[in-house]
Amino acid sequence: MSTTSSTEGGAEAPKKQNEAVVIGASSVGTMFEWYDFFLYGSLAANITHHFFSGVNETTGFILALAAFAAGFIVRPFGALVFGRIGDVVGRKNTFLVTMIIMGASTFAVGFLPSYQQVGMIAPVCLVLLRVLQGLAIGGEYGGAAIYVAEHAPPNRRGFYTSWIQITATLGLFASLLVIMGVRQAMTPEEFDEWGWRIPFLVSILLLGVSIWIRLQLKESPIFQKMKDEATTSKAPLAEAFGRWSNLKFVFIALFGCVAGQAVVWYSGTFYGLFFLQQTLKVDGLEANSIVAIALGLGTPFYIFFGWLSDRIGRKPLILAGLIIPALCYFPLFHMITEAANPALAAAQASSPVVVRADTAACSLQFDPVGKNKFDSKSCDIAKALLSKAGVSYETQALEAGANAVIVVGGRELAAPDPRVLEGQERAAAISAYQKEVAAVLAEAGYPLKADPVKIDRWMVIGIITLTTIFTAMVYGPMAAMLVELFPARIRYTSMSLPYHIGNGWFGGLLPTTAFMIVAATGNIYAGIWYPVIIAGFTFVVALFFLPETRHRDINI
Image (cartoon, rainbow, N blue to C red; front, side, top):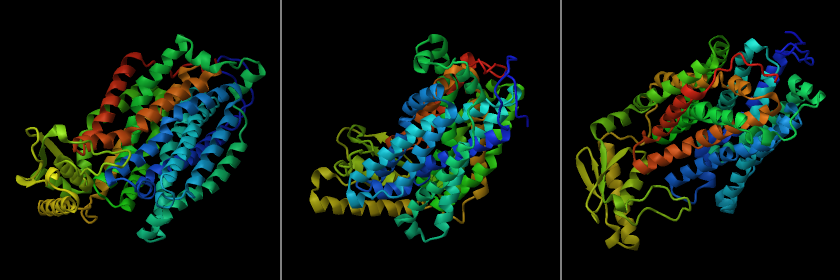
């Protein structure tokens, strides 16, 4: 490849580095950073046990997902801080600093004491480390995508930047491979007790490699030219968000592209993994293996759609990548259930579960402070039992004050009335009821866990691969579009904020929000409404407001 280039407008530009080195160094470094960030999500079940064991199981898992989401919530603030630094100081040094913060925070998670050892200090420290990770990742993506785009030939920006787009998926893929390797090297009990820490500790090696790779890079030629000519922005935040001419494209980027991309990405990766493990009760190693294979099969499509966007445009692919999953997610997740846990699917069809109760007396099966044992109301007793078992149910309203009843395939099981029971008598009645319902559910065919012999692995892999392809369709060309939307002098700041609001808030909160919806409704598929609605809304905004940017000059 050529080592020199001229700007798209014809002016002479500074010498460029070899494009293969630029793409490789940027992509590998970013992949390692995503590996660090996604370890937490891949090990959410283990983290629940060690850091949120002071609450009930359903609440513990949602709190673990909330701590996972904390890293996403702060990403826009990292985007503001590091985006400004990237537009003032430079692309290269900014994403070098973010990498060091990310790696050190991830390494520290491996040494954190558990809730059993230090109580509430453990989850507080965990959340603080997640916040540091989120701030760091908020400055990473924009820098890497811009750095590659500003080295790319005008007619190959989609293809070049699509290598950055695969880094999130490859980071998740790498985290799953490391976790599976550690799981294979020890017993399940050893992994649950201390082995889960090893992938976090290994990250220090990846940090060293990543820093070395990034140190080989020079500054972006476009930024270097602006710096030499003293045309860099002195106030990128004011220019990016204080002028409507640019701010309107920030809104279009967020609501007409990134928000939908984010929920599509997290639905096809993390939510698919959590759905297999938490809802369908597939063994953790099995679920990780399935998702890892699917990601491996689907990842090349990011490159393909990035390349295709250089030929047909960014907007058509982004529109297709938004509307297709919005229309297909419900049937696809039903198909996952039938393939991964056919006994559960059959039981749901032949013996549907209904909770009949005074709905005004029912609590949401989520308690962030861990004080509600869900045993003071008959409705709560019934729903807590089914939520813990991962059984989908419908709720039917009874008259005020009525005692709750669980109906399994027509068989009615009245819950104990805690209003007339106290102390040990109440505990004994609830325990007896739980055993009775468990026995009836077993008779109706509801399994405690997915039977590994009956899992149609290739069907599940195929479905998750398909959701990965949907993601690639919208995400593959997106980096090029975001770079092309904004002027060079405020590009880092302008594109980083909508990207990280979209992926940090709309996408990162998806697992937590979806599982809270499931807990509130009792329907294991209800959480899918969240990505379907967001993707559909983003499609409409993109259709009318998102411009085609393929031929734009990014040097100005």
